[in-house]
Image (cartoon, rainbow, N blue to C red; front, side):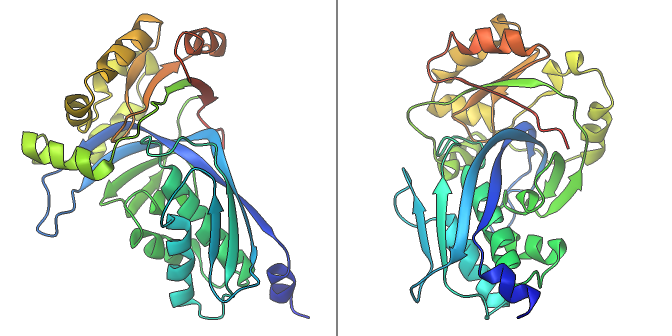
Length: 285
């Protein structure tokens, strides 16, 4: 029996890490409707967990409590199989810990984890670069999560440059009601809130600066659009800053707000003041 057959017979467990948009610059929409971006993605300790095994049916099955309708992990399995037809039908069970529709990339992280698991079950026929190419067909946040870590992400999400970030505590304040990414981008277009030019070098230079000076530089071009749709989020951001966060804002398209803290005990005390808040950390790699 070959090693690949051994791999295929075993369940595969893959973590799917949440990501935080520390900075998100958005360009004018292209002719295909997609917006180019330039963003710093921070990888968080907070993670879903996927359990993937060959299924006993003729179609992929995905179980994920709290997620109704089509799941991006199923689309990932199908996209992988289009490249590697020998992949058997998969059963995917997702332990969901990342809030849903929260601007934390949970669905994208699950899809990337499903690609990694499918690759292992198939005997690792594809390298990371090819997996990222497949991931780019699934969504702009998926390629960066194929090898999850802190990254400078550009293009429409397909250009991923690993970066380093300092060890910081993070307070996440999710909301009971999610916010559609498509809605937020539509609002951005109505406000014409995009940039004519994106500059990755400016973001690289910021990484070499003192984190205590980051507040003014942490721009999220989707934040004004998110606040226009959900104005109550402004009070959450103000509360995080008042508690001592040296940077605070909306993550991605929202509605989750975040605050960065150098002291985890201060972060913990701050989280106690916000209903449903979660304390996590930037991942160490």
